[in-house]
View 1 (spheres, rainbow, N blue to C red):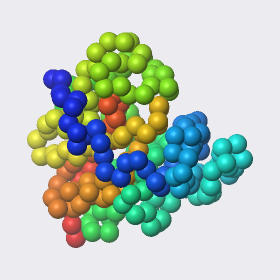
View 2 (cartoon, rainbow, N blue to C red; view 1 turned 120 degrees about the vertical axis):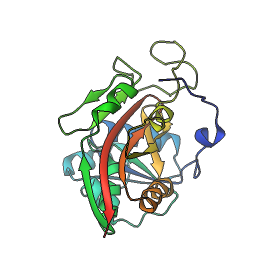
View 3 (tube, rainbow, N blue to C red; view 1 turned 45 degrees about the horizontal axis):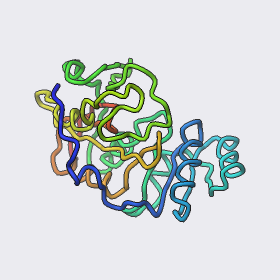
View 4 (cartoon, one colour; view 1 turned 180 degrees about the horizontal axis):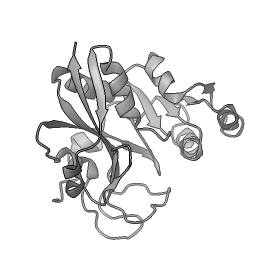
Length: 234
């Protein structure tokens, strides 16, 4: 693996920033963290937190003061009419971008989730493979503090120079007969990241134009999750 440039303005300044509409998917530990930190950082944004667990989501409404909805987070994402400038904050134990993509492809053809090919492991830092075939990657060999502000040059924990951007490393994965799509997660507050719906729709359109087998990753600067799938149009 090689280090990559960290100073591409198209990477550092996404469209639809600062966010005016934010949807937080999940109200567990990380969803609650997102609700607290984002509501302080973007007090004028239109918020909604979504979780199927009424006791969790009601706590966010009561303690943080945000509007909430009792519903499965992925179901909400698939059925709500979210325009392109809406920021989605995944805070559920699910590869949200992958599941949303697979569900949308199902309307155009057959989509099947596959195990990530084992040849990917050697191409990413600190690979951790799940029984499901999902692969996690991280520059860190430790538990990162949830107060990390994802600085450009120096690791918050080690105080050593960064090794690059993981989302760019993942874009460089090469596996025969697979295309690679990486969904960047931008940090909006320490320990909290997400992406605009328009950006996610752009990734879906890219996949729809080229039916094939894919490696799909969601990644911030340091950590990422990778899945594989194949799809064919009807």
